[in-house]
Length: 358
Length: 274
Image (tube, one colour):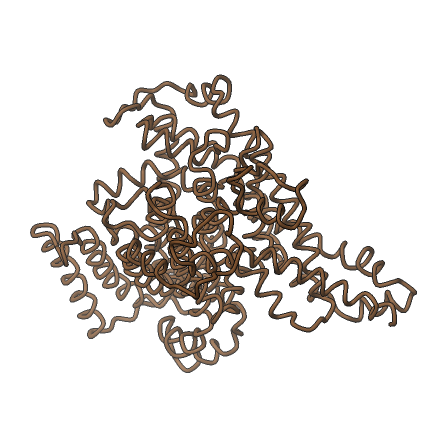
């Protein structure tokens, strides 16, 4: 790691060439515009030209032969992109949420926390959203964990066809929330009598009339609880995969030792394996929890903006883009962010600390 | 040991019952899609087709969604390729060339994958309008690449952590630079990492809805937006809708069926393990 500057003529020429090329492309894109197949590529062109220019800068930085500086310099475009698109935009949203911007023209008149207090204290729709999110989150996480753990233990029994079953439980994760919401809306059709269909029809045919349900059309808040079914269908496989990974990570010797001590198979799970799976449960709760706090597309496809199944994500969408109430929309977005941050930040900081200690 | 054998059939029964629950929606989609128009009746929803198998619905569904399937493809392919390249580079730098504060920067980048996108949506729309990237596919590609930086960086960083530093040090003694080591040692070992990230980003972008519905106009809608719109219209027969839903889900489903183990690894990386 000698911190010396090593001048290299061919590389210097390359650097200058890249910078000139980048600047020229920027100039051309800026003055003429770029249109390919009727699409406007001007901004993309400027972005790419900027990166070409920057690669020239990197060639110069590389001559200093201090790799940690070069590493940072190469990472910089990504850092800037995330800095703007995540942190810069969050700050901008916060500013919008503190204004009274309603209508298409930006209005940044400062109103302090008024949007937040209106939402939290006086807005019945937002209250329904919070209640729905709580119902959904509790139901979704608990059913996913229980089902996921059950599936993982079943698959741990060294049964034939294990790989096939594992694939069956996991495949819904590859399908979009929109597609599964559309199908489940049909499966959970609430019609009764002569128009009975979906799972209800299946129950009726099987003579299980007592199981016939209004599903997500039940009166609030129970309707929301039924939206957990498609969400569980889609993501319980994820919990299963996490638990199965955790169980497989426990060495066979530990289990054998417990068996030698006279523990039954059930006791091995109860007293040996389950306690060792606690970190897995924590990961699963964080990942599933942050998904459920921002649940959006599944409910859109399932409930078609049914007000009784409203969640903050949908409220934000409609109030901002249908109602042009930007300030309120921004406040809802920031409240969603806060709820996710409370869940995720301690976990993120912890895992990074744990890693640093290794 | 006897007792273990005795309860095995119960385990199988439980697994089978659960498998039925997981397969039910797909069974319904395919079954309904294969029925002719005149057999579409709410009463016979679960019955097998009686007049042979028909593929009209899939053709009708395809006709409804064809432009949107093309839009999705045009978006997803450049997005997956570019974001895997970017992620590979970032992951390499953050795992093998740590600098002061690199772990803090990594954590800050990582937070970006958890945020609800509603919290950045208004600035994003304004920014994209200002950059004249609003409404079309290139803008959507850019957005997916940028918000994909956290997960792609994470997957590659974990992947490269598994490659020993000895091999890099040997290369350094031979005089290779940071970039040289990447090209001659890291890149040839990266194929599985690229498979994981490309498949992950493909699936995510294909299935994504919020950015798609907000940032594109109707002629550039990806398939999720078009499908959601189709489901909301009263004019479409529901066996066509089921066939269309199946077609919209098919690409990611095929990727899962044939490349599932890579998909699973991407999934696990999201749990910050490894």
